[in-house]
Length: 296
Image (cartoon, rainbow, N blue to C red; front, side, top):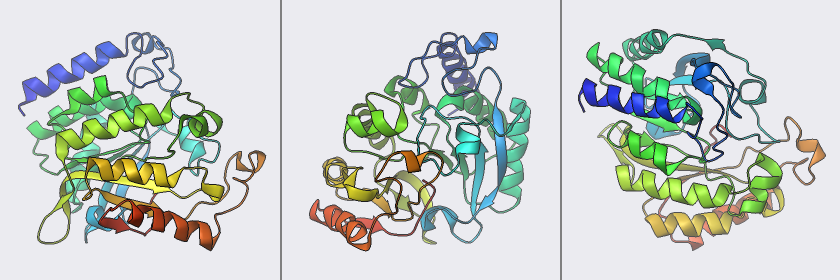
């Protein structure tokens, strides 16, 4: 994709921020005028940190690490968020788009296998503009869209051909859990739409001869106590996309943020609950299951 096309897509995404409709909340905040959206971010990129990251899934990490850029803010307000200081309290620094370019090129220079935008949904207009400039300056790494799974298909369509790897969460298999624990009324409906669009764009995960991901969909699902995440429903949907969908069944849930106020989220899942989640994935016919933890 040439730079002119990327700049045009960035402009279209910025237009969606005028009365913001970048995410399914459609909060209509006048972000270009300096008003913060439900995500907590207005008209400038905000970054909490960046660097080689070795805690991601094996296909992203390889030997050189995933080049993670941790973006501040989030369109979800999860009561159990492990990174709530960044996602909900706004820890981070406003930066210029040219600073994002410099971060990407520095991560490439340090030998990372990809550029991994963590929680990009609400900042995607800035990111596409930065990618356009970085490509002109020699960026050649695959790009990873690492989201909470609450994404707008209208926005995702502007990313077709921009991102090589989609790594969304599939947090819950019903809307009620999303309402109670993440503050949105339609998580599962929008998540299914988003994952379908992501899979249409990039297909199943493809790795090179080193086992490093170059393209495709990788889905994360966090096991919650008492099957609050409705794991079986999620797994059956992922299998309907493709039995070759790469799924990370994450078992590291621990109570954080306001989780103590929402029993049974005030405890980790039991060994039996974790085993039941893996069994549900296998019963759905999914062939590419991974058990190592990633970020919740």
